Image (cartoon, rainbow, N blue to C red; front, side, top):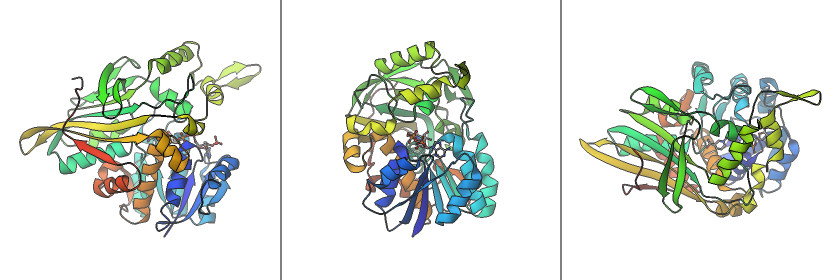
Length: 397
Ligand SMILES: NC(=O)c1ccc[n+]([C@@H]2O[C@H](COP(=O)([O-])OP(=O)(O)OC[C@H]3O[C@@H](n4cnc5c(N)ncnc54)[C@H](OP(=O)(O)O)[C@@H]3O)[C@@H](O)[C@H]2O)c1
């Protein structure tokens, strides 16, 4: 049985703690640590099984390595913020434990995320005999596993991939983000980017729009975005000619975002205000609803999946793999809305597959580099069942 240290007690951390607690045969001991101890205690008090809590500043490798040793963890599931990725990877190397996260490193003062900071850890993890799994949420995460599964079972060559992320949830607030507002707004206001014929193509933020008829949700407007799994998938999918990522947004969300952007509230550079420096986006985060508080208010469903086109045995083929998740059902199970749930469940599954020895290849990996079958099996067993269909609604060319 493994001893797991979960770092980050936000919306996702709460789900990971609940879901690890549901698998006592693998996670024999659980510690939940975060910057604010009270948030860990609030989650601990929701869970019937005893779990340990601790305060830690994960920006520093030293205290994290100290905590890993103190609680004798075998594995860290990092669901704090992307800014802490490198410090926690360093701490895992120092203390000699396995590592998993859900979002790639992003320098705090530059809205540009990339695996270029974490892939260089591969040699050091490999040499230490440790496994590091990058991006084990839903997207990245399950979308990478869907790609590996399609490649393994349905295609000789995948020519195009479209990743479609729809949230038809309604939380009743005029404006709120479903996960950390700072990370979410930095992602959405960045330039769009997709990959075609061996080159990246850039688009203005939210300038490419299409409508798609999502199963169990209905037609929604979706926008082309750059998303982090594209960076690894272009390296690992055979025969790929184009890959794009789409996310749905309501007109209301976009109008609020535009106004906030126009008045400078999404800026990430410090602004002098009444004798001190403040970062407008961080101040905005303090004003917006905490994503962890949206659970009891959110109704509706998410649908996230991938559409593949390619060839099998010389024949053209199209396949769509997706999951539908119900916000209210998630809240009933783990006191969280579906965005935190769809991230936290795959984080627990990735951790479980390291803990039980299924994923133990030394080194640092993206999920499409590992066998997708055990992960797909666990998705069905732990609350995120998936559908494979060749009956696919129309998609723009
Ligand atoms: N791959 C995916 O599909 C996907 C989807 C959604 C989110 N994510 C990722 O999941 C992660 C968590 O998201 P979330 O919505 O749960 O965010 P959140 O609600 O803001 O929670 C983040 C937690 O991390 C803690 N934290 C921040 N800085 C810390 C530090 N220096 N040391 C220790 N703890 C620290 C925060 O502590 P305080 O409570 O003190 O602020 C907070 O409890 C993010 O990295 C996000 O990008 C991935």
